[in-house]
Image 1 (spheres, helix red, strand yellow):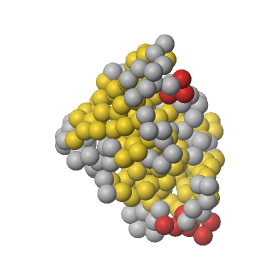
Image 2: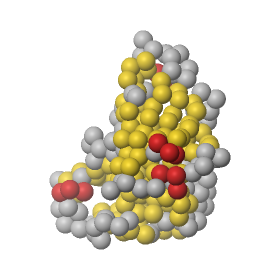
Image 3: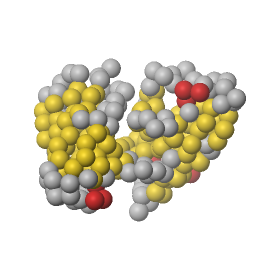
Length: 107
Length: 121
């Protein structure tokens, strides 16, 4: 099975800051990588698929990039409503493994 | 709009069984693969199972293989997860999710609100 790691596990930043979360796969996954946002008590929400394609309705301050084994999610200007846990997920093989999550808090 | 509503969760003793349901609306259910994904309390997300649009294809995580069965009723726009021989490690919120097939693999594009399963004596 592919193993997914994320760093950092948590971060705290100011409104307006640029935030970057990294996701690493244990093998090349050819951009078969999705990002989800989960707020407390809510279901995850799809943000980005195919490593870099923004899901419809998602604010443009979110962006994704990467290739091979290393991928990043960037929030260009952090907003209060972005406080959440962010998960990456590979869709290259079964099982569709999720990363452990990165908790983003607002200072 | 797309809606997925899970039901059937609850408290069950170790070794017991439970059947989860997911009622879908707002899209052509029979055109989509569907999946179950779970989240242990305070934990991360774990994919559990998926089923193809015609039920021909299914797959399961190793952690539930042989104990869980996934099925669907397309005319009734419903997805099911039969869970047998439950253990405390199966305690989690169970989400049903729609799978959108993309050029870069499966995308869980819509999720239900989840149903809580607690396995405890």
